[in-house]
Length: 210
Figure 1: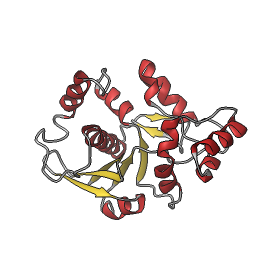
Figure 2 (figure 1 turned 90 degrees about the vertical axis):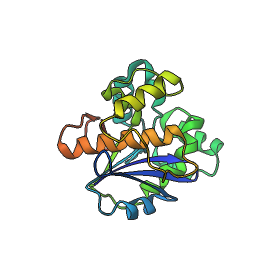
Figure 3 (figure 1 turned 180 degrees about the vertical axis):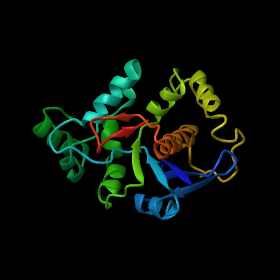
């Protein structure tokens, strides 16, 4: 069994993949709950930074931006670890600017809580960092997920990996982006198990796997 995990409102959406017609969906409130739900999984692809730098940008984020080319803006640079202690966005910017010379984006600030959940957990070799936009690029998707063309492309390239008729057990608050990104994360996790995943970054960690 393989899992793909993506952040959603209030927690995480988890796609438990055991073949194209055997995908089960779960909601987890915390990263710890994700690991409980995926205890039987051989690999877990998670769309979140795993492993933070102390004093600058992560090489894997830079590699992922280069991989995406014109779509590089979808990659948010992971914050330096000290930012996780900030009480608000202004303090986070001040910490980041003091250490790196640059403030963090609002998008990065919004995910720091989720980053912190995983950063606080013991390392688990089954868990690999993925980025759905890189995964979809590897599948042949070219259009933005914010467009109808991009959504259709993502659904089409996943055909064969999953049954196109999604089961009724999707978490109620999950959006189409959340669901498709979780499936893309599972796709990259399966490639990692099979030895065909592309590493973005110097490795072994932090590395984004495609």
